[in-house]
Image (tube, rainbow, N blue to C red; front, side, top):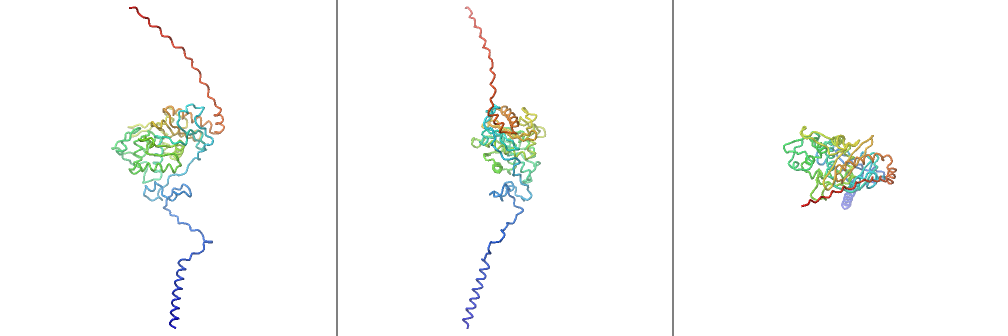
Amino acid sequence: MKLKYIFLTIGLIVLAHLVVLFVCFYQPSEKGKEPAVPEKNPSAAVTGESAGNPAAGVKSPALQAAGQNPAAVKEPPRTRQFPAFRFQTAWKGNIPEIPDSSGARSGILVDADTGNVLWDKQALRPVPIASMTKMMTLLLACEDIQSGRNGISLESPVKVTRAAMKIGGSQVWLDAKETFKLEELLKAVAIKSANDAAYLVAEFLGDGDVYGFVARMNRRARELGMKHTSFHNPHGLPEKAADNDNMASPADMALLAEFCLMHDNLMKWAAMPRADFRGGKTELINHNNLLPGRKYPAPGVDGLKTGFINRSGYCVTITCKRAGKRMIAVVTGFDRAKNRDLFARKLLDWGYARMADPAAANAKTAKYKPAPKKAVRRSAPKRKKPVSKKKR
């Protein structure tokens, strides 16, 4: 009898264990079950570029550096305000109607409202961009101000460093005893193309790490879709090796110009022919000679940035608006600033005249024959009178 109770007790213990194991490991069928939705984290900041982007869900570089509550920071704009570039109707190479086009190493002319590229001369080829680099430096500064990164504003005081003092080329002769508002420095960068001011801005926004700021420049270029761009410094001065110069394609610079157009302050500074600095002790004069009040003003030009080093030649990125129509031009590699400026002015006129129907305009250009040069009559050189020999 006792043996019977022993087996019964063992059976109940085994059954209890089986019940426990069943409860722990049983999973119901997935049929008819709603998929689990992950809880949204209101404090998580994402880049927001597109669904399925492997970078989505990762804090932006600005927020990582800020070390503050992302919910309190407004992210910079990520989307384009203009259509993507379309090269189908682009005239390629030198322009028969503008013989000066042969002086350009490369360039692009874009009808920004439609995305139609009207002129393409090696537009996807990376070339040295010199001080056009400062467009990215200015863009990052304006985005940091807009997002409130680290509490940065136009009024933020920036102490001049000895490293910034040593930067040469076009400059505003910063002194380590001086402190400026960030807005003043950005105006010096945009108008005077001041290399020392650009370096100081990079130091300030990079928390003392200029190379960290340059890394941000390259990250932002990739985010914007600038596929043929590499930055090595924030100002555009030449590096020791040509391979380390700042490089970008004309198409990339035109794309960067579109994002610059999103920032009113940046474009306001870039459109200023002149401005005061140091309370009027220093005058900033814009190198963009196509602006109103400069050497070769062109109707509608409202920006953006020139550049020159020996390896880049004279280059410029131009924004222009006539009768509500927005055009962006990039020209590189000219031998003289005057030749660059005069060609750019002709290029804008040429582009606005054909933007309504570029395909038809291309057909006309293909048939265009430049007028023969008028023969110049040269009078025969006057004969020199023979020198009479005096009798001795």
